Picture 1 (tube, rainbow over the protein chains, first blue to last red):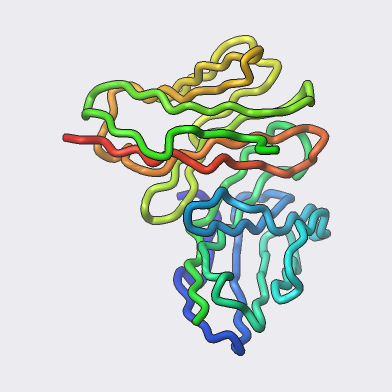
Picture 2 (picture 1 turned 45 degrees about the vertical axis):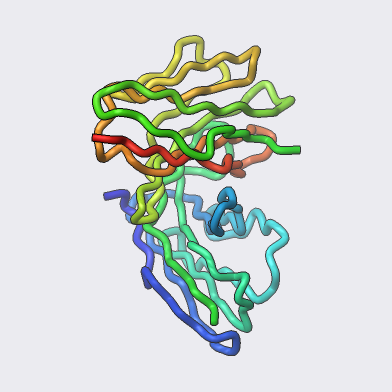
Amino acid sequence: ETGVTQTPRHLVMGMTNKKSLKCEQHLGHNAMYWYKQSAKKPLELMFVYSLEERVENNSVPSRFSPECPNSSHLFLHLHTLQPEDSALYLCASSQDSAGSYNEQFFGPGTRLTVL
Amino acid sequence: AQKITQTQPGMFVQEKEAVTLDCTYDTSDQSYGLFWYKQPSSGEMIFLIYQGSYDEQNATEGRYSLNFQKARKSTNLVISASQLGDSAMYFCAMRELVQGGKLIFGQGTELSVKP
């Protein structure tokens, strides 16, 4: 039980669909993250939010649009995706975004398949 | 340049034996943190153990310990008394202080524990 939940756990969508991934953390943390994990590749950081402000956008295509309405919730809005966007999308949170030590707690991930 | 290198794509270990998973890193920063995560087939990333660059002693957490050799820039994970439930992907990660919240992951090692 990590205190970070993600919905849905699995998502299949067409390239013309619009969908959203949701992440919620119950740990009182100030920072939240989106990662992409493709097969046979290291985790790639997509976005970092600290106190609801985006502090990093790691050259992510505009078809991925994050939203952080408050420190407990993080969304990833998806539109006009490509098949190569199929991956496991992981959300994480940590007490703060700065500093060399800030353990990140991960959610279970959303397995996304784009047809 | 690759920041985190895990040279063992896959490892096998007999149940109840110890196993060492290798990780080397590259940084010019003096202050950084090193993390190990476990990812079972369910997808969730589970934090295992942390080593700070200024920590003089090797970190230990239960059956997990780190062989931290700062001069060689390596932080190998040792799992003692392997259990069948240890079968999973293991990721080494680094966070540099100057990089803020960015956690950089290696490509992972798939550990299989044999009964």
